[in-house]
Amino acid sequence: MDEFLKHELTMEQMEYVVQLFNPSMDDYLYVYDLKEDYYRISSHATERFFMKTDHFYNAEREHEKFVYQGDMPLLAEEFARIKSGTIVFHNLHYRWLDKEGKPVWINCRGKVLKDKTGEPVFLIGCINEIGKRQKADNVTGLLGESSLSAYVRQYEGKLPKGFFLRIGVDDFKDINGGLGMEYGDFVLKWLADCISEAIEPGQKAYRLFSDEFMVLDFGSGNRDTAIRFYKNIRKKIDRFIEENGYKTVFTISGGILVNEEIEGTYENVMMFSEYALGEAKMNGKNRCCVFDVEHYKAFLWKKDLTTKLHHAVNHGFEGFEVYFQPIVDAKTYCLKGAEALMRFSMPTGERISPAEFIPLLEETGLIIPAGKWLLNHALSLCGKWQKYIPDFRVNVNLSYVQVMKSQVLKEIMNAIREYGLSPESVGIELTESGYLDSSPHFKKLWEGLKNNGVQVILDDFGTGYSNLHCLGDLEPTYIKIDRSFTAKALNNDYEHNLMVQIIEMGHSLDLEICVEGIETKEELSVMEQFGPDYIQGYLFGKPHGEQDFEQKFILSSSAFSDIPGASVQTAF
Ligand code: C2E
Ligand code: CA
Ligand code: CA
Image (cartoon, rainbow, N blue to C red; front, side, top):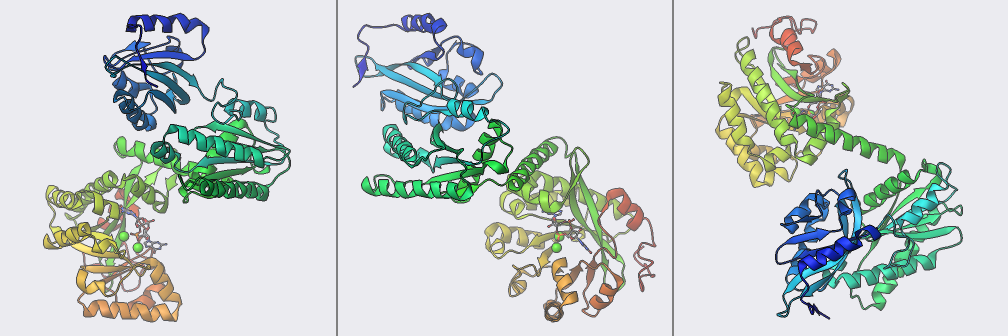
């Protein structure tokens, strides 16, 4: 029932009450003047949370400063419901930031008070920290995270044989959002009951927060018993859904830790189980995932590398370098140009393979600034080296992310202009991948480059996606046969014949062919029978840093002198 302001309480009076209770409470009382957008909370909140004062105007905006960013949309929706009078009772689990900026789970409850006309005027209520002091959870009746912590810490470092199973409801927000908080609580209560029912001697169940539960087994359970437990709960849920007439259909995911396989501190238990549950959700939900230390290490490493890449991009591309690998004319062995290849080193100096960092740059979109940086760097050097070798060309690789999400054509043409190059001294290497070439972005770029006279090169030919019949439509300047295909052609009759046919077909379509990955003189002599137009491979040179490349290939005329037939260097 709506609560009206019967006694004409003023904000001052309510603020006074908040202050009055301050010394005698661990929890935080608050009152929110919805009309004035003014907020007052027990003053000890300023000692715990990321807030400067215990009262402020612009209350909704000010919340952005101390509410965990990921929970702001949820809170904004709740505020809208409160202010429009849609709800009269506010009950939300979300996160505030503590003094150090770390998220802390809180439960904020409050009553909406309306004036005589039915307009919401005040929200008054109480905030408590979920994990910290509260022992048993009001919704589910299960013990909370603080009890789990106390129990596990007794065994720290030497956990008994058994397992942890962390259970989370998939898309719980949708249940709350679609059917209301109360129904959400009903589901959680029911799930808690069903977990409690399944508990056997040696096992305990806790509610962590929001929609997550932890089952602990110190009764010598193992991986299989944990999986069975999870499946058992899943079966019960299906029954529940049916019995409730499909009012809501939901699933759960699980993260499992086998005690013997982890270093059992409480912090590890929480971190590892969160990771395992996250993996289960990422892999499609409605499943469980057993924690694997090696996967976890790889995940942490990837996270660390992503942070370093972000930092590098934001700090003048520190750690990034451009390497150049020679491309030679297959008939004269003259240097035709180079492929620019990206390199990245950690601040410790550790060199990271492009096979590892390029996919991360793509995932995070950082390939857009990093690729632009490389383009400019490579083209400026191309201009410099053309003073020695006038028809020297530089090839740059483009990722599909740059094609789909950036103004890369404009950037390429700007760079060509800026460094005074002719468009045909720049080659853009693109990988055809079946879907990419049918996208309008790809088509526009491809056509744009060709119309402007830039060389378009179909990269990684022979790696699986290659679509022979596309060659006629795309009309690249030349195609590059990937080194994995070269390796096969050198060792296997079938691939050998295929390579001969591809080169013949390319030539019949008036396309030139570059073969990648020639490492030895023997390979070179086999390859020569195929009649390619260009060669790129370790035999002629590995990728080199700017200065080495300049010394070895631009300023020296004897770079390939030990390769038979390569003594005549007519390029310069
Ligand atoms: P890719 O475009 O196929 O580049 C050729 C790769 O083959 C280079 O590896 C090169 O060092 C290697 N290679 C060339 N000849 C030989 C050889 O004879 N033997 C052996 N074992 N390897 C040879 P790298 O530099 O490790 O680059 C790997 C991949 O990373 C590239 O493959 C490309 O897909 C990507 N990549 C590198 N730089 C960039 C960049 O600036 N932008 C984008 N989008 N991708 C890049
Ligand atoms: Ca390439
Ligand atoms: Ca390749």
